[in-house]
Length: 112
Image (tube, rainbow, N blue to C red):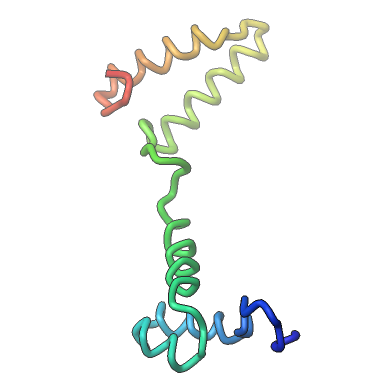
């Protein structure tokens, strides 16, 4: 890795960043001490740690899922059984079905 860059960008090693991330996540160092010890930029360290922690929420996007995994699997199996019997659902019929299931299971949904 060329550390003699003229533009001043990324004058740190990727291994140092990985070590700093581990140290902060293991709570052996705070952000300030990790930045000084490993000579990495604070904002990049914060961004990378935040990116790693944000992936554990269990769902995509900004909305929480309406149904749990079991109910979603049941709906998917029902749709597949209907399809094998040549009785496919349109997207409107599928949305109606899901809305009815949400009402019957008392799920908190964005449909209300």
